[in-house]
Length: 399
Image (cartoon, rainbow, N blue to C red):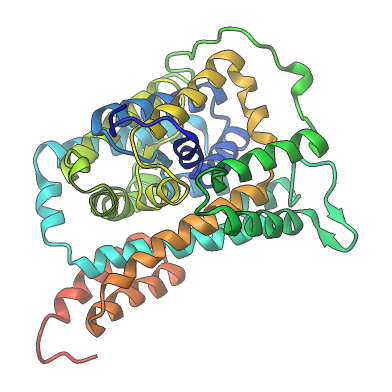
């Protein structure tokens, strides 16, 4: 079997590594914003397969986090979310086909890329801890640490923390184990917990059949939807997409896969996200992107080839086509704390990429970006980081 496609336990484990990022936002946008579960899962599955086949290496598929977080918090309509997806696809098409992104990427200093990766990694770890403690946005909206478990505490201890600690220890013990891959074991353990003590919400209405997604299930967005989406969703999302989903992701793919990732260029990644968001728009899914954090997650848990994309893509597609809108019930089985564990280990993998810069000025830029990210957001940190990196190139500037 060629190295381009490998199908084994490690690839399966790695394919599940980014569910901690993907599922909470997908579930939130389905439950709060009314997105179609079939459209969401179908779009994700198709995008995973297409990108794996084209790029020939592991490619992450993630929700656009700024859009997702704001949409859930503000309970935006499905048409506003759809409008944001097609608008950002148009923007990426312009900067990708004109070659503008190649020019932008050429002048982004390495320390800024590492700052994006470290900041994203720490954000993932923080979100993972929140999922374990029951304080993530999704859990607060559902008013429960583990919304789909019938048991919330064991004695004085919250069940999420107990599951998280046990899952974390198991992950540490199995992280380098090729026979029992950590990601696979943790997910299977989570599913077992869900089957044993889950609320099994909606299982009585689940019907297995052949379900096909509806074209434009919410209709074409109104002009007001496009105006709102541009100002409230697309403009704040764009700098983060360029910094993390294009530049930092492409850099990390080259670092992990070397010459095998030669197709992963700034331009091709932009075009890839254009296609993904058009597919998602047509079938009522959520805005999608790539990302350094997602790649770190897949890689940390064993993904080394495009086989992982085929595996996870087929899983999403089969579940969507067989279960239709009931597919969300399967996601309910995995405890939030289990998803938190995946995020913590993926985040640490990504944050540690900063170890290859030793210059004090470079480290200052990276850590300044981390601070700005927590004080404001990653998009603003990216812009400040670029400016600061060029200011510090002056010999008269000392740190």
